[in-house]
Length: 120
Image 1 (cartoon, rainbow, N blue to C red):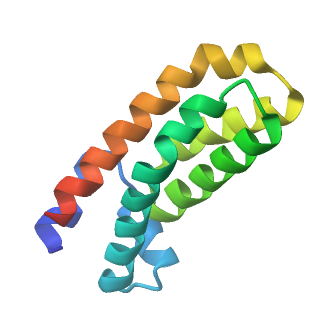
Image 2 (tube, rainbow, N blue to C red; image 1 turned 30 degrees about the vertical axis):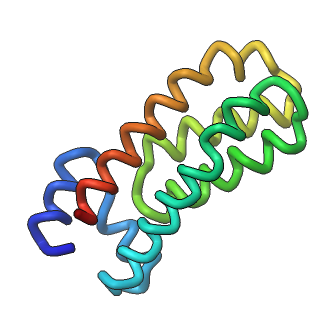
């Protein structure tokens, strides 16, 4: 990843400065974190979709993890959506979860595409 890729991330709404702070200003570590995020996307996307509105503890744990990993990377829009899902899950608000699940999944897909592009 080079400066052009970082600038592209910024233009697409990623708070690269926040991500680099979390990565202790190490571009290599930031790239590793992005790679882990993408692995988790592949592993957990289907689980989030399947667990929405079902087993609240499992769903809460999944979206909590998504909120944290997105926030660490500077994907603030995704982190905010995951936070709202986490909060709704803790409150047992399955209506909110189901009504807003597609928005979360769409933002997650978009964020994964943005990060994949930056690493290629």
